[in-house]
Image (tube, rainbow, N blue to C red):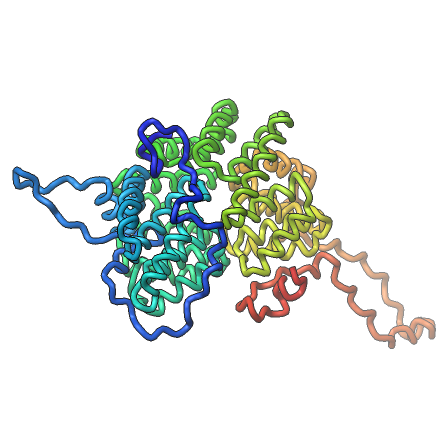
Length: 560
């Protein structure tokens, strides 16, 4: 990989830098919760100006100082200054600028090992690098730098930047509960500091707390106007299933973005929205635009591959997936590529990708990253569904109750022969409002298994209508299941009426009725038949408090 996207690389280096045992900022991966949680009551407030310059869970940056050159004109900012400026604005820095910032702070802390703000900057920059390169080894470096920062200056004494860095680290490792704790501690100190809200939005979203995520997004929009707020608002609308609002807001963010990295992320979001609407041609166009704007927008390579597969441009899709995995090796992409191979009958290649997925998940676990969700999705469809259930029950017990976890748990339960219990979770995912063809497909299949044919038909129709090519394996199965159900009765189920009863025989006169019939008329009516089994299956409402779930919650009734 080129120098401009890798920290600590020479111009001719072709591989990612590996943490060295001699590196003073490398620790064994302990997880974001390895550090003691922040105290619930704080005696002091944040006073340091450096805290106000922390990016939204991305970078810590100081104020820029204009320097004139020999001609008296303002000097063009260098890569370090550009990274700081992006962080101060709440926008992503380019990978080349992020590389420069990391190198600059590494050199500085070598001679100033007690500089808490610089250590916090370095730690949060490592988090961002690891997130955008999928090199999870950098999370250990981040944890070490942030830990040293807090040793040099505690959070109570003004080092909220390190606490925010730990929140970003926890989110990146999918430890959303820890991220929530760190972020809320900073929020108690400075509720008007805009840079705490993005990490809280990510944490609340990961925990499935839509109400808190909505409130945090609204507050962020009030405190931090512009493209960052528009991007977060578009994501909120998307998660609630408000497609038109999400699209309009995402377009405004793309139109107003000026820096290439920020523009590319906005275009990528438009590509994702187009894909979810079942418009693969538009998705390819947006992903291509994102890559032209910033060639390091590697997630758009995977998005483009997904859309190309939907267009039956399979050779191009395979090449795009392989490129994405080379530059951004995420387990989700390995799963998608394996399923594409399987849909083409290339079972050997599929098994190779599935083996790589397992290796990637295991490597991430060593670095403290929890990839249980993608591993469980793989196990449910291609491995051991019972193992998937156990993984996802652990997620649910850990308060990871997002729509994605609920859907995956419902499907894994169905695949392991527990469709009635699975229905509860699949319905929870659908009830969030998110417009996801895969969620509708899973719910419809489970309902069909339970002989609840009307709702099953509606959800399967929604799946193929929302995105006809949502999965190279599952989309054809959705159409087959829908065809097997057949067409609904003319007029729809709402117009169906029971057959009229036969016309009664003429009533004889009272004197003509036998005594036995007169006695039967005095008996009470027979009780109404009991509800059918499928009618008795109801979707539970999510627990208002994870620590005290209601009896209707799946966690209370089923103890996942």
